[in-house]
Image (tube, rainbow over all chains, first blue to last red; front, side, top):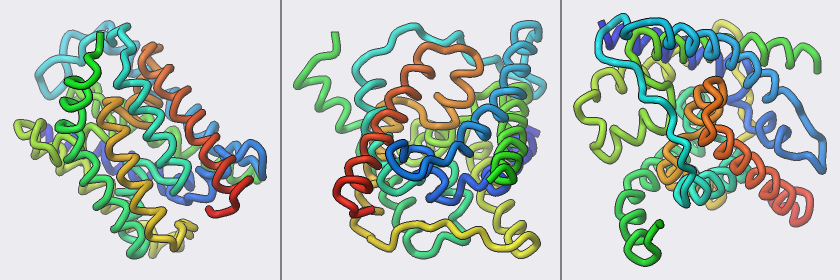
Length: 144
Length: 141
């Protein structure tokens, strides 16, 4: 059942990315391009997505356990930390350069040409390299 | 323009509903980078099946929808060097930060997570400065 629910969630996510136009890199770069032709569409997408999610978090506070068993995620940590800031900055740079983030990169894979495939491979390599990079950085500059 | 905003809002509602399903049924946060990253580096081996099910649907639904509603032009740059660097930065950055637009942005901010809010501020600032530098000043993207 977990796989079926995951497929349903992924289908809604993929359809939402397609409908909202978020697989169009010009809309993402347009949102980031505050000194150029600014496009606010992304704010509508984020705002729209927050509504069902906020309701879901309210339900989580009252519910005992997820429908398919297991437990709900732990309360968010208040710790920020170097990795969060460094990682988000690097991610933002890549997001701005190509106008793609992980979800839309997968959603658009079937119609994004060879470039879309190259992006996903490079992203996967970056993800694969991260545990080693992180431990190197921790050794060089211990995080508090 | 306003039509794009309406479709954006509608698509956003679908994205958020997907996140709500993943949270309420499977008890998991719908973060694309975490779902992919756990498969790539093996840290999510125990939950590989639901990760693959999720990603298969993310890939398949647009594939099925494009012939019905017309192809979406993605306007992706044809500069493969830029694409490869961007992909590496997105891969490394989201794993260092432990989240991306869906995990920190949609799922984090909607529960008022400080980490989600701070991450989103930083990736939007970094993205904005990157586009300002490479598009508005250097004119290369």
